[in-house]
Image (cartoon, rainbow, N blue to C red; front, side, top):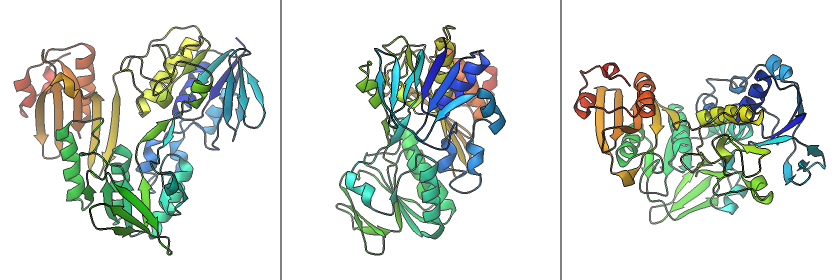
Length: 403
């Protein structure tokens, strides 16, 4: 094998390239990116970088010296527009044609804007990449009020950052609760409470939103039947669109994302996918998290080189909001009617544990309790039978509950 092409240059692409070289691949690696910034992580954009507690350089996954050592041939800024599977070529917007022996699609996802006309309003922004972050940070320097469309993780993280800067913040969520796709009603209520305690106004069931730009570039938010309010800027954090177009046009198996097996391999044996764009091989849907992008890409890169490496990690993500570090392990499955155990170790340390009918852990949401998350991962992996009474007892040391 002489040439591998990677489409995308984010977290998944970076770890794939690093792994290819660590595993001894000495052929050509071509990376196509529509951004100047390469091999960087996105989670700090809505937190430390937006608040200017960290620099943009801190996002980089690797040092300049490490990237040089990868000996990558770059095609940026450029866009992959088509995959010619018959001739094993990637066609770029610039007109370049890149032959490949193996191809990795790591195109990720992009910010979803529910109403197209919102994109034309000057002080309405999204937060997905470095350019978005720079634009929003500049707006926050002078803005006194901010509206956030979307009460998911990205919206709540931006809300927390803006409130810590003293901004007036309103969150408008379409659904009846916050983060409804990933957490239980109890955790949604917890999130609502911590934001309201910090002074954020949360509007649930905001199903009829209209944005109107004023002559002074402020934005009026009409949330029928509530009274319209005016904001200096609006951030649209209404979820993500999976960038699956290359897979669709190439005739790969595609659902909400590109379908891959446990090795990251698509329906074409020479094409792989990893990160946000790839459907989790066990769960059957795309996982948009830092850990997934890294670990799925590592497994896919090894598998591309003939070292079959399975990826079936337990979903894990985290969010920093105010003084709370919130970590989520596993997936909330309401249809399974899980048993809820609440463990309150201290006023600032709270965990929600969801057990199946055999008292095995299915899902954990831990607030300021990283040690419990580490242990709980082993519980899930080993299908450990747990004692609900001991879990709920704040005086009991759960570290005694061996996997």
